[in-house]
Length: 279
Length: 279
Image (cartoon, rainbow over the protein chains, first blue to last red):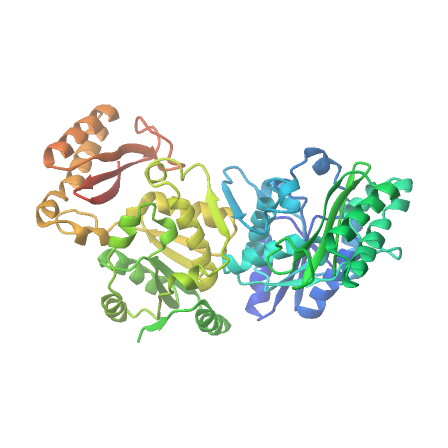
């Protein structure tokens, strides 16, 4: 039986009782519209914690685009049913006024790794992520927090956050979950038209092809240029970025002399897709 | 026996052991050069917690003035002896590299109450305070933290911080401790020349006089103007501010229609003094 909690005060009491019994709390922060990617995180939390909290909060502070915030899918009843099935203990679903009450005045900002990629295209996004994650870690007092590698840069930002502010939570990154055709699961996928949904898996396919060619020795920039052309050909819109970055520090990478990741963000109609893979 | 700890990792182990026994940890964050004001905080922590950590860290991030940072008094051996006598369990005295290691990239900023008074005269000061306090709360995992009312605005900022980021610590403000002649205790007082030390108590005396006249019905601005003249007459240098502010939100106040505080910052030679009193 998953208990729905809406206030930080009620959550604090719940968590305090668990902690008195020496239990380790795991948290999965989400924005709801749950899919198998989220559920894989809930399962990891279930395996690695005594009690599991899934938070569902569509955080206005991390949306740079008001239309994206407005159109972000929400379906709490469905989310709750999925979490019940996973044996999640608490669905924490606070309202905006609970998270940002009158007088709220604090921002957590991170320089460096927040600046390229998503940070360059979504001003203020990572301030919103870092601030709300600080709050969720404080509210849940979780010992472990589970994030998907799908949001690779976000995962690095959250790891930087907890290290820098000495927040007593261990961040655990979990693999991206994909549809059978390779499309990375995302709550925003439901907004794709049928025609666009048919095109969408080409992103992962093209990225994997480019990664294979780079591993075979083709210069990265040539492989990425070919990939960009293939994506345009396939029917994608503007490419915000398609880049190689070092795993450590997300610095631009031109070759495989250190571990790198290929990251992409691009448009398909009015939906923005992101993905990333190891190279 | 007060144990000296210098790393977050060692402190975490110590605190984890206490927490497993269900103990409540109290922390007194300081910059060292301890005086009776700090010791009153340690005593309050002793009374209201099972275990007491006093942190000593001269936080470069909160000094806007490099000369002030350099001249800030430091005497760890003396601090340790004082804390031994108070029965403090741990003196946590990390180095700068322990608090801000390579790659550190995070800032906690608060708008509103950080902007007037000290915030106006010490750019970046409260970012440094909020950031280091976030870190110290994370490192100590304290349930209670004790701050002096001497730094009234800082106390409000820290209260805002823990409310806004849902940090699970209760902030406890403790009264300003004064010398017999009324001078508010401060680590910087040791830097006053004998002549300036003789003048310094006039600050509290003049503020109390002004507060009494305001309570008797004199318009606040007239009373504050007279006080400014009296301070100049007494030999003080530039007055950064001498103001009435609301207790709630530190808004400018012109009268006693809601609870107010009188706050001052001014120079005596090359030492900057601050003080505040209820009106």
